[in-house]
Image (cartoon, rainbow, N blue to C red; front, top):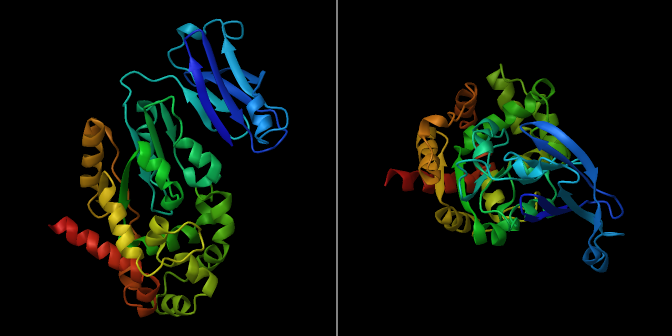
Length: 342
């Protein structure tokens, strides 16, 4: 899916939305203050889309003017959403808008969406959970050239978007101890039936099905039985838990394993980020983000933690099999912690 604003002169607004379907006609929902004002289908053709073979008819353009919405010039709070996907297409800049572009690279399987939500009304463009979108759509998020205020979060494979990110965005990331991240992933996957799997998205639910099935059979209340189960972890499940951070930073496919120089590459990448934080020192991360964005630190929520994570992580450290599984992430995390000490 492609989309972008073309112009907003106050009394006339134009944009385009190219759906994934070759012949589909997109529709947008126009909202203000959370209330839907109208919904309408594309009312203009973009012939270039036909020439490029991107759409059958090119009917992907939208023009919104006072004929359709008489109050358009007076609407300070105005948002356009794609009806089919619910993706934000355009928003008029809010008061006290933060004129920065920030990517919070999500590294946790259980996302910090409550933290992200604190920035929704401070940026002109906002999107969380970007990993649930297709590659073309994610790329488009970094190419919205008509705006200079954007906040995006997602557990995306950085390598696939590095060129676009580094051209316009600053990046912030907060890292878990690898054993604690593994413990959190096991606990979250084991409770998907209770908490729901909406935060994973269709792609993760498919690619991690073996890991999900495995986690849901674990006897967490019996340490010896838990250790036996983990030692006998199926290969497909083990692959899903192998070095997730190093893979996210250095590989281009979900099932690709990091190469020999991956830790060095990951360290170089982290060194280029605006903010690198540790989950064990969340207040420092929150403070750094607030300073970068010129916000009051007290207006931002705390970074939460699951109380069961650290005790389980301490158990997992006793399993040498997991040290092999997390070898590169452990090395990477060690260097980051040592840098923090200095």
